[in-house]
Length: 84
Length: 137
Image 1 (cartoon, rainbow over the protein chains, first blue to last red):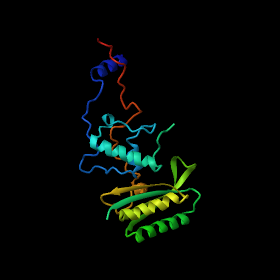
Image 2: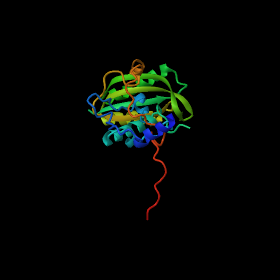
Image 3: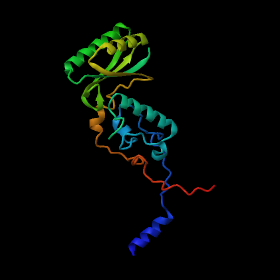
Image 4: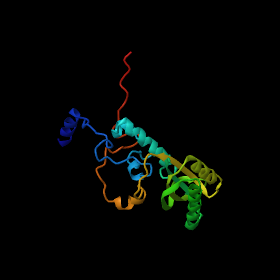
């Protein structure tokens, strides 16, 4: 019986549409820095690829800065280009 | 004069003391070129995330420079000749950060997990868009 309730309940609302805000535009937002690996790793997938901003809800301006920082970090070897 | 952040990677089998000498030589080039080094940070022997010129580890050094571009160009020319230096990156910045860089203060900042912004899942991101709608032409 429980399973049936579960399916009907989620069918109506498949996704929670919470308005995601850009994590870098707030007043005390962390500065994007190519040396800060811990911050950059949050915006890179397990394979090492940059996650698109439509998924991480980063504003376009900050996404460009983020991409530039990630590419610099990859160049100096503190972040991988690809993870096998 | 222009402000630059400069990072260079030294080969794995070079001793830290030699890295210090290399840094001293570079600062000499900068000072004689009319600039100055405001911060000199040695990150130690770190493991690289991919092999660079067959090396798995490298000595990282960060230098904050305030120098004319000729001094920087001269320093980079000498670094290109030096075989112990694997790679270097010079970036012009608007202002130099004084305190320890993000790499150094990482250790005491380990505890604050902070809220994790939208967890970027796998390559396709968190949700799956499902199959394509049927064609309608």
